[in-house]
Image (cartoon, rainbow over all chains, first blue to last red):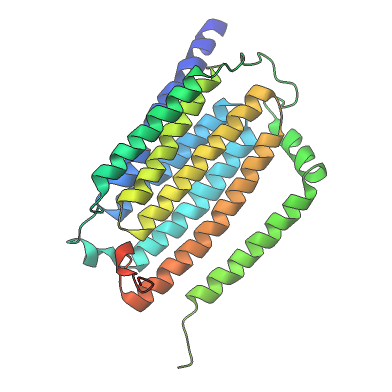
Length: 175
Length: 100
């Protein structure tokens, strides 16, 4: 039973990674913007699964709430708001797409080879600081003691973004 | 656990797909989604190193990245809506007023 769960957890992460790469390609290459949004939803859910497999339950939950619950809905509203059906006959890609694809493949090969050759150590079998099965407490302790000032600054940043978004989208009543 | 170099290579691929989306697409909304993809690739790295170094700080940093990503999306989509109202388009090469 131990061996089976070891095997499953070892190969499950490769399966989730492969699926998320496929859905990420779906974001970039789908013709319809709604299909891109749906592909992004699946990508975010799969990335949350990767977090779960790395013993970060709290971050997986936050990923689902913030991305799958909030940001995707926001994207969906805007995609429906801007009437993309009028743009269907236009070109999807830029004129220099081929150069971009070559550059991106070069980036993958260069960085991939670098990371593959780099001697990283073995993964620890047991984690103490990230308590397996309950990392929320550990994250909260670090966030509210060591990182309390960045946390407050982040709250101000979110407030400013909220007010800015409202002002930008507010229809002009005068003029 | 799988070797961390595999996680890094996966995150390079995810990041590069995001770069590709920003470079080749003409739709501003798809470009914003590709930006989100890049931030997620960075987050995967943070979480993986947090697990491998047994240090919670990586997860806290990932929370901050998500916070910045959320505010960036709110502002970016607001700008997209404002641009659509003015120019009736969100194709990125229709916005060329600053061209000299």
